[in-house]
Image (tube, rainbow, N blue to C red):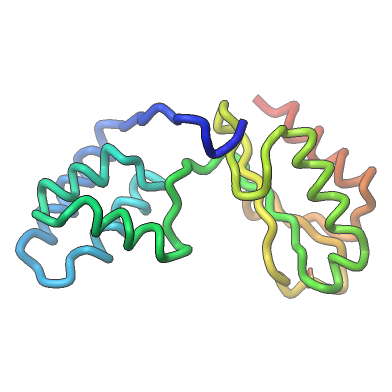
Length: 166
Ligand code: FES
């Protein structure tokens, strides 16, 4: 599924409370926009439109302004992250050793493009710059786990391991 997918906004009670506390602390402060967006993303993992609307109302900031700031900075995302974020290194050392094929293969298998999250929110697929492990090229990470010296076959095995996880 692509980023076109509409992800249902789900909020836990503790997220809700944490969000309210953050907003209370930022109310009336000058330059509250960036910290408010950062707090929202930290709490929810992305910026759902429902949250942007709440921020707009509570902090009296135009929704368009919040949206355009969130769009401008790469640190913000409107798409929820999956349980497992797979980052395929596309730095030079990894690229020349076939990282592009691995990324393509994962993209086909998961039916999402890099930067997207599967509809069940299990996987987010990303490409990244050199992570400083060129000696292990080609390299990918799944959350904090690093997998190196991959062939396409080995990489597919890594993916299958995570596909099998509940
Ligand atoms: S290029 Fe991939 S780890 Fe350096």
